[in-house]
Amino acid sequence: MVEAIAPVLPRTMRAIGFAAPGGPEVLTAESVAVPELGPDDVLIKVAYAGVNRPDCIQRAGHYPAPPGASPVLGLEVAGEVAAVGANVPAEMLGTRIAALTPGGGYAEYCTAPWQHCLPVPDNMGLKSAAALPETLFTVWHNVFERGMARDGETLLVHGGTSGIGTMAVMLAKAFDLKTIVTCGDEAKCVAARKVGADLAINYREADFVEAVKEHTGGKGVDIVLDMVSGDYVPRNLKCLAEDGRHVTIAVLGGAKAELFMPMVMMRRLVLTGSTLRPRSDAFKAALADEIAINAWPLFTSGELSPIMDQTLPLADAAAAHARMEAGEHIGKIVLEVAGG
Image 1 (cartoon, one colour):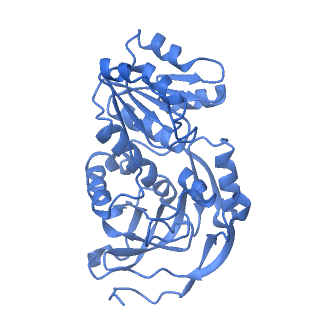
Image 2 (tube, rainbow, N blue to C red):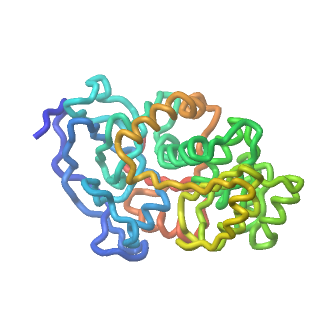
């Protein structure tokens, strides 16, 4: 047993689980053991947990937890550090943090590597903090690192009012990028413009390829952040300027795409992508360090705030998943575990 600095903790806790994969209705409240602390972990008394699309995919049986990760859903939380492992700075005990977790967020207590945590100052609400890590880590890595975004460039984001979409628009604006987004109805287009999108396209009423060409004077965009894949990929490539970068982070529209490779060659396009959860702890720690320097201060200062959709009690996780899968949300859905 790893030595840890900790007060007396309960042995069991409330969590959301599911006996077998299925729709949102399979999610139920249950009593499970409080997770054991590893030497590099903090134990977080969870106040709020963010809801993300990978949670829904895992619940449906298509995105199993990595080896050693909690089977409980939940990739981001905010709360108070209740205990620290042997290798963790002791001064973290009792502090307010937001954390990217390998799983386990839909529960009263959750562990996370201490280097994947970001400090939450007193002027910042834990609800807002819980809505940030998964989307912030994902967007920062894929737009600014893999996508090599530069000042003055233009970014196209599909799903402009999703948690990822709103985060991408906010960060792009903060770093002097222009943004074009696609949305499924006019109300969401209006919401995307309020967040800061320079152009919001209702993809049900307009061809986004033609709209992008018109808006950019035929030049195209420098980066596409793609969550759809499938038959969107060849259309996305038509939107790219020369030397453009196409970054895939999900395949909601299908895992296969048919490409005209001579166009990739002639226009010197870059096709890349990533998944965050399977990456090593060391990679995520390095990413957290970069975010702590470059992006986290935008939120702790109040310059940026996550776009919030609904906050539901932990016991209503099924309703949160149903709302996400119906595409009704604008911004982040958060579960309240203990408040704060």
